[in-house]
Picture 1 (cartoon, rainbow, N blue to C red):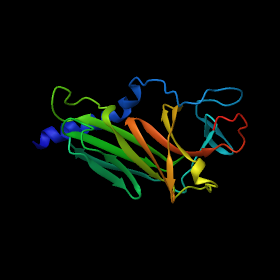
Picture 2: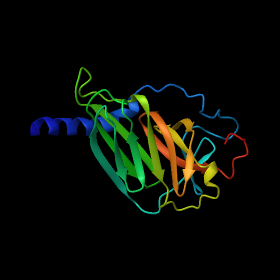
Picture 3: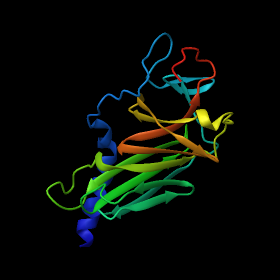
Picture 4: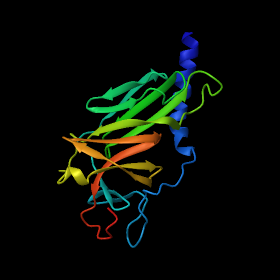
Length: 198
């Protein structure tokens, strides 16, 4: 039994890097690039930017990960005030979830899931039957968030903006629902962007 779990954990570690290789549909919510706005990550002396959005930079170098097995009954993983909530029916059986929160160079969450039973055992789960709720705390951000109502969670993969997620703000947390796993990043409108995309 212990060897099986070691094998599964090794597969999850390998899968974390492979998750970015999964095909993703183009989202109608993704902004159209026009003019100087790029859907790709760019770095300037003013920070990190993508598609007209400024990514929130963390105030310290930290990387935290929570791993848990959640089945069809649902469950929750927390890292401080950040959380991933898996509702009942989102997965069909025991699934290992890996929830990683990084604060350097910018705040982001990386999400990976792997089936632990059934015909898909050992395979990455990237799409879910029910939307999952993701809450990201930006309490440790270097910059101020002047208007939290305008802040958004971005769906990013390999440095490319896939979608601007519908987002709600409460306190210093942003919440969105997700049906695909990859990377999600809290952001504010780029104060220098005049394209009107955000």
